[in-house]
Length: 512
Image (cartoon, rainbow, N blue to C red):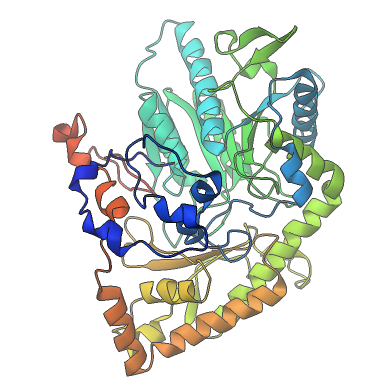
């Protein structure tokens, strides 16, 4: 959830309340205030309070919201799991089994160490915990020979999600972001990253699934270059993998000795509800004893490495239900079906008015003997994500058309397809992005293609373009929630000193 400002009720025109009230069959709801910024003295009926008209404006999340990676389709039986807390003994046992399943899946070594891990509240907590563990490891390594323990740094690409920049900002770690562009397929090239590593680097974060276009960074190549660097300089820098891949033969896990920790979101392609990620360390020695707390709770002894304590067991239980219900083979089939649908969408768009910026529909160079149309491993590896833009021919012929119109027009047809600017250095490029999940069937993909083409062709006609110009230029109705709640970054402490600090490229976020 975002950081928001307190709204002063006195600043909102009272007459708007009258204009925005509407008749309803539920007479109790008629007395419900439209804008509640203070704690009202008298309550209203539960039915009236539950009425979620405004929330419905965000659309149906299960199918047509193609903006997010988050899985939103849960079987009805999953609702029964939601009341269970996560700290009780039986839930802890199931939690432990999930950790073991993932450690085995990610090829954790078993001969001389034991993998450890935990569920987290999303990938942000997982990234924070992984970074803390590796920073403590680096501090301990620096402390023994009496070296400086100040000013550590972390190396990652500019396509990383905001959690990495938060870690760097919250714990005073220098963020060394590696610039990416279309030439690098919007991912970090190991040859660029290796030049930013020094003795104060606590880890290299490798993103296996770019947020921009779903492309994979090369974990194996990064590991190989770091092995060579260690032979030459003695620098032993670990890799943390932030990952979502579903390719059985892709080498990115603990079978690479350089990989110390891995996080992956269960609520993305793990097929469970929002609020679950996993963090696995290759061995207990990766965690410093000062970071692990011994708890004596409910008659048992537990060891905790989390940022919060009280959390529901429901996502963990749902993850185990999926492990049992779907199995390894079923998970692979679902992932490959998503990729097949993504390839179908990419090809259809590329044959019309669009340039596709993702590569998953292109044959892999590792398949010299031809491409198996049904085998996702015959294509460039990536997430089931299709990023695209209007092609040069269309833009030249209809220069007045704004790509943002597609996002607005598709929304009227029920689809949520975001349009956003590319990375710094490529600001002239806008991208539309579609994330294909289990709920997006082949029939829906065909319907989406038809709707996208209808919108693009509507803008070719002068009356269609004029209609979009008029609608996009309208200021609309006064909305206090939207107009008063955004923060003003200039008011934050330290804003007067906030100047460019030499970072060469910004990703999805930047500090205020």
